[in-house]
Image 1 (cartoon, rainbow over the protein chains, first blue to last red):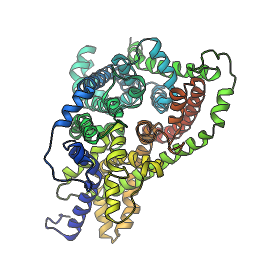
Image 2: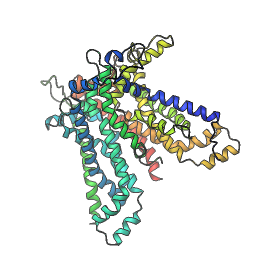
Image 3: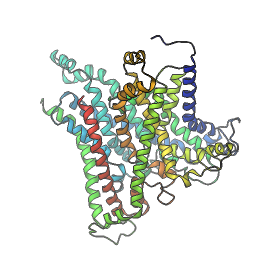
Image 4: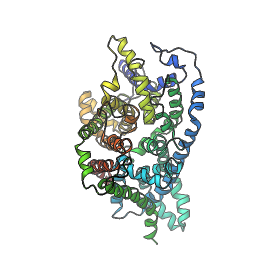
Length: 276
Length: 286
């Protein structure tokens, strides 16, 4: 049926309702962004201000007072390194399970996912004690290790479900033609699996960037990530909404924009390819 | 060679996950059986089941279990129902659909601590918060959300974060629907409710399972939202099991009791996992 291009009442209604709900849901973020450019007095004005002359003071203040750049660097380093490390461990495992399926493959996959079901808090005391004894408490390395391990099950699953869709015949054909294992991986598997690797990496990056449980409990002034920086704004003295907003905006803007570009891969990845 | 290589490739992942699981588990079991309070180093020795008894008879415990289930259940229910409604709404083209999609998904990428503080201060503050202003505009008395409805407040924050995820999954699923089938039903005079009941909802069954499963994994241990807003209070009104264990460990410094609680959480998670594995296992065979 050709859809009518004219503005039917149904379409107008749909558009209005959809936009209304969307703006309502997006409102808190929009408000956060606005508040970041207000002065502290404007931030708590009653009734709320919509028109004001924007200021950048809050951003300067955030950097001066709480060293935003240190936390941002920690966030970038820990999330990128844990993603790379995770891919390095997960990709071979997923390759092995997808192309050399054995009777136990399914059990191993299920077991891996079940470790993710274990609530992080269940491991809090032991991991804290271990981190303390090994000197990894409040270090980036400690966070990288913990992030990697807690994302690993999801990464293996995602990569497995991507690799599984690559036809075996192609790899076999390459082998028949005399390709070495290295050539097979580099010339056949890598190009075909690149999409899977990319979306797995993206998801892991987002999860690590936003990770709050371990970073709140295992890091503070030295290795703290942006999630811990924001938590320190929980109830400081005096007026702080504008500064809180500025810090928050700086903390989420990179990953939200990043998410916009990769939303499709991320969602497909998170469902392990079960929803297409 | 042919057997060895796949195993070799699998080993790092399996070994690291095994260690990540078994070492903390072993230590937790050990700690749960001894007296281990960081503030009372003189008290040591075997405690038998004292820690378990303490944790399980703590009046906070029942509340925490209830809160965990309420939080899980209501967020899953809200995000699934509203997510399906929203996905159906934006399934067909309308002006600005692409932008709507981007704006809708945004809350999903917001880190939990920002989410929590944004709602705690800018939205839910009883004097200056946006919601208070809206309430006043309509002549109602502003609500002190975090004090009067702490658990509901946490539910709102978490649901706000996960609704976009659910919506996007359902949207993706709807796109793979057989359009001709819908047309045929329409031609045969099926009204929208009938189409919903017999075509759309059955098609979404699998994605509902996926949404429930993923949210189960991530929501069983909601922590940062509680930590940064209510601190589990007032009283235990917004304490879930994860937060109760945290309180025992890092606020009461009682690693023994916290470990006993952690083991309980593991049992809880395993029940959920068994349920989940049946769900996903079915999908895996397809």
